[in-house]
Amino acid sequence: MCGIVGYTGHRKAYPVVLKGLKRLEYRGYDSSGVALLKDGQLNVYKKKGKVAELEEAMIGKDIDACIGIGHTRWATHGEPSDRNAHPHQSANGKYAMIHNGIIENYALIKQDLTNKGYTFTSDTDTEVLLNFIEDIQKNNNCSLEEAIRIALKRVTGAYCILIIEQDNPDTIIAARKGSPLVIGIGKGEHFLASDASPIIEYTKEVVYVNDYELAIVKPDELILKNLGNEKITPYITKLDMELAAIEKGGYDHFMIKEIFEQPSTIFDCLRGRLDAKEGYIKMSGVDDHIEQLVNANRILIIACGTSWHAGLAAEYIIEELCRIPVEVEYASEFRYRNPIIHKGDVIIAISQSGETADTIVALEKAKENGAFIFGVVNAVGSSIARISHAGAYTHAGPEIGVASTKAFTGQLAVLMMVALNIAKHKGSITTDRYSELLNELEQVPEKVAAILKDADQIKSIADKYKSATDFLFLGRGYNFPIALEGALKLKEISYIHAEGYPAAEMKHGPIALVDENLPVVFIATRDVYHEKIVSNMQEIKARKGKIISIITEGDTISPDLSNDYFSIPSTDELIAPILTVIPLQLLSYYVGIAKGVDVDKPRNLAKSVTVE
Ligand code: G6P
Image 1 (spheres, rainbow, N blue to C red):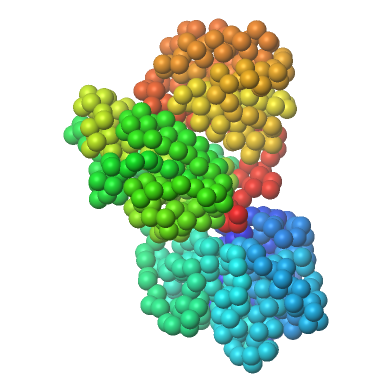
Image 2: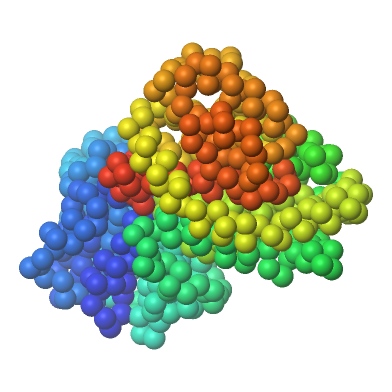
């Protein structure tokens, strides 16, 4: 979490940094701040709250500097406040630093520094690291760069840091381990940021800095080194991203823009990979490693949050089509257990950002144990994409709204193609069934577009139920993960308590909550479980719960049982989750809006959880 931006060059740094912080606000918005360096004067400004509040506080300040760093925070150590906001300054006032990550051994270092007489103005681990660097620099009488190198070898945890120095008028020193850093290369200028969104309007040439690398960045020079002080040749990549992709494009919020983008993002995900007419799926990440995948003894899926829900859906699909045992793990649990991993196990890592700290560490652990890692990632060039042995991008484009929407449907589409591809090679699917599913999958973008045309119906349902204090989401089989996802979306965006359950499991507890005030959302599309879920609807109706159902067009039974219903086009039950989730995304959005929640930046959340 936390977004960081830096600039050194011929422009005024402040507008570049401020705009960058607004783009990175999805990573945290508890406080923000900038440090600007001009004529040997190091000025730090910071403010609790969103970046707009910093912007207001900056009116009338000296913002003429051509070098600056900025930070938008998701609080870890210390409450959101002005004093805990970054940048932090070292005790001697000479250095200003921003940090994304957590220094795990900060307490010991702080104790040591306190014994030496250091005092601290914040509760952050960042200020401790900075004073540690200052202390090393003084004791060794070395350069700042050298002091940073020594300090970083002694800290544990994750970091991406940017430091500027009062006596060094044009240099930013940056380093990373576990938290992302991209450097944009311009003419006589460099841009540094947590992701490429603050950079793309200035340059498309970027360098993704790797773990344990340190960058010395001046307007005309970028030097990359490892912590052993050896130079590394920067690997320059071209950004494949347009500015329009990270702007709202006429929508009120990124979330609704991203929901409405899904017909095209799913299309982009399938494009060039699936051809139903010719009857093939081509995915180089799968094809190049097909033996490994087909012969997997077991597939372990590792993810967090919404991506974990995509993993759960994939478990049902892969086991059905490929007949390979699948287990789905929360990355945060997996990394701290002593999991049994055999050679021949395949790990599928699912992540929108490709930077989720728990997922990264879990993968590193699995990799050490000899597992083959297949990444299903949205952010191109991200850490998880690079850790993976092979993979497939979801191609949903930048997702800015904190609640994941288009990345989720992209994950489902990719995982479906991966499963079909493996099943075809393994011979665990008949030719007819294969073509049937290819055909159905190819039609998904237009079916999603058809659902979105009726978004107003969901808006009316949202208005009707916006005052509920609890919601239950129920689904069976392939739609059970969608019940979990529907509940998560509603919680995130509207702050209404919601739970997702397998519909039958509802009788083992949640049914006690049912009364005339409880809306129960049933995902009750036509599939093998339909009769069973209709019985569950009867059970809720008998207890006067309010039933909202997501049903298949033409279903004549469910509407009679429902207080409200929404129809989706008919599709194969394996593919239904990509459609059934859309009305639930809309429901959470419209309820959130009706309740006045800042849906793109709901409280306490962050888009990219780069701390454990
Ligand atoms: C955060 C986000 C979720 C996301 C989860 C996993 O909690 O708010 O939307 O699903 O992290 O993130 P990843 O980038 O790994 O998919």
